[in-house]
Length: 177
Image (cartoon, rainbow, N blue to C red; front, side, top):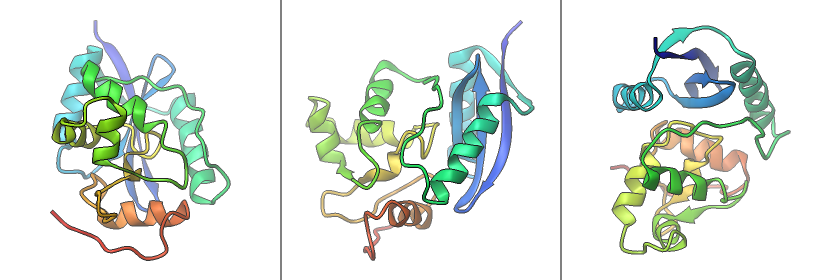
């Protein structure tokens, strides 16, 4: 018998999220209507040898509570236990993302340089885009080297709103791909 990822939808102020937990850890907090939804779900199911079952868990309910505090401006860090499911390289990128503090941003070049792989900008960007735990693993804090907003699974408007919430930007130009 396979494992179970307990999933729940939640409407955040910037879009609907799909939350999932397995073994008392959050493995999914992603945009429900993103372009790569099926690919991310398949990767999670295969990596964790699991199937989705809709149900609340303590982890998903705590995640919602902490996200509500974040959107209310009352929380700057999350303390939800995470279960990362990806390649070793993807996991290294996601762990590096966790080091970008609230209110700060990093460029893709900066992120790849911090990983010791300055030539791997595209691979870093791809791993960033494959992040299944949005907001908590702050991929929204990665911007273009020119300071412009670039692609985001939740959409550029959501990324802009998150960065405005964190006080990073007042107004910023956006670049759409």
